[in-house]
Image (cartoon, rainbow, N blue to C red; front, side):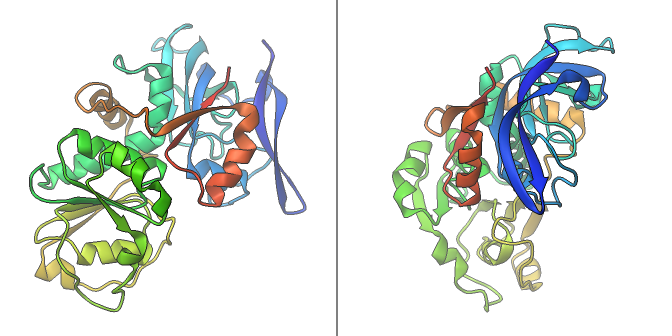
Amino acid sequence: MSEFKALLVSETEGQYQSEVVNRKIDDLPPGEVLIRVRYSSLNYKDALSASGNKGVTRNFPHTPGIDAAGVVEASSVGDFTAGDEVIVTGYDLGMNTSGGFGQYIRVPADWVLRRPQGLSLRDSMVLGTAGLTAALCIDKLEHAGLAPGQGPVLVTGATGGVGSIAVAMLSTKGYEVAASTGKALQADFLRKLGANQIVDRSTLESGKDKVLLKDQWAGAVDTVGGDILFNVVKSLRYGASVACCGMTAGGQFNASVFPFILRNVNLLGIDSVEQPLVVKASMWDLLSVQWKTDLHNLEREISLDQLPAEIDKILAGKMVGRIVVNLG
């Protein structure tokens, strides 16, 4: 096949349009591994790319999609051969390299992982970057001392991709989970994922002018950033930690040293994009075996043609859970 279908985002006088078009394999960037993509997933970063955010994607036309799972079509290196089932998440995929919203990608071999044995290609994209990020958050919290039975663990932005998977994963591992959201109608959704209590987002937005708040949380996964993140820091129990992995509420917050020196708390940064491949592989092993979590309550499958409408929804803050893209 010399042509394939892909979502292409183009720019005309500062306006960005998305449409499904036919592209040529010869138009793909150089790389050692050509992959026929079977599944991808929709992430907030993909929506930013599709809407022309230059901090994510500099040059257009462009095919977003920071996640891809599929079958090796051709490889110029011995590590992979035609027919191997593989996944690619992060690095430059879907940012400035044609991504998983196309039926083919061509990427460097050191971006590619073999499909984890405990997951199908589709299962791996229900998780995708969101699942990898959630796992990195929980792993780092546990290395900092978090364990089940210590008290409630807060998850902010709990209806989003990372948040919903974190709620389900923490519950499966035996934690008491407090899920924070601004979507009151999604309380039942979060309880089905395993949340023990629902925290209205407005509760976490109050008290910005205080240097400390009531110590409530044994740990936290924060996906939103901004002043909510620092209010979470101010609400941690003595010695507890929060893993920070998102900034939908803003990239800045008003901070003070008091929580850190009076309650001995930790603010842990999480990046899933540029992690060494060996670290990603270890996380995927956890996700496929020891930490395997039933995610059927939070995922929905769409086609490539349905992507533009779903991108509009995620930009409007209306997406819940995970969207799997079937590239057919």
